[in-house]
Image 1: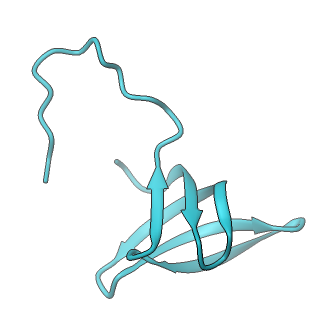
Image 2: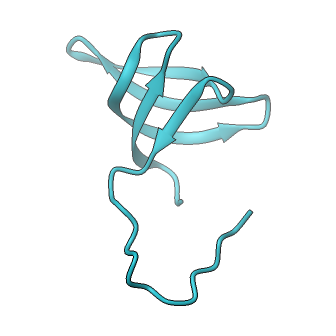
Length: 71
């Protein structure tokens, strides 16, 4: 995934379920750095990797052959 990237975010601590945000970077200290909208304003937010789910809003093309998964 190239950054910045539009993502869907789930985080129980903030009671976020499927919120849209922009993933800016994955911090080596264990945080996702992203822009989230709260009310009418966009805020830079650090969310812990543990306890946060980040999902690409576009589904994968399952018809592609020979998929390589980078780990």
